[in-house]
Image 1 (spheres, rainbow, N blue to C red):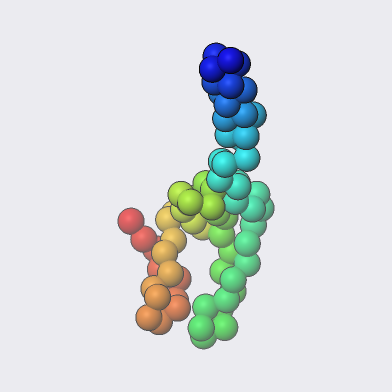
Image 2 (image 1 turned 90 degrees about the horizontal axis):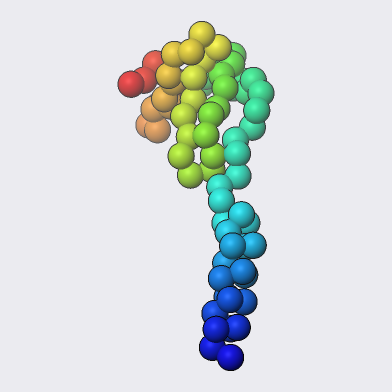
Length: 74
């Protein structure tokens, strides 16, 4: 009886583990505006937990939280 319950638990974990993975980010070009009105375009890679942003030439971008401007980042 214990073996059967254990097997059911293992099957449930395997079946529901796919639900627990992060959702992928948007697969396309995203347009945003700088605080001065300049339009920029970039792509986001990764998932909801681990992601990064590159401009259309492949350079990394970061947004400054205080000024809200986008800058080339490391």
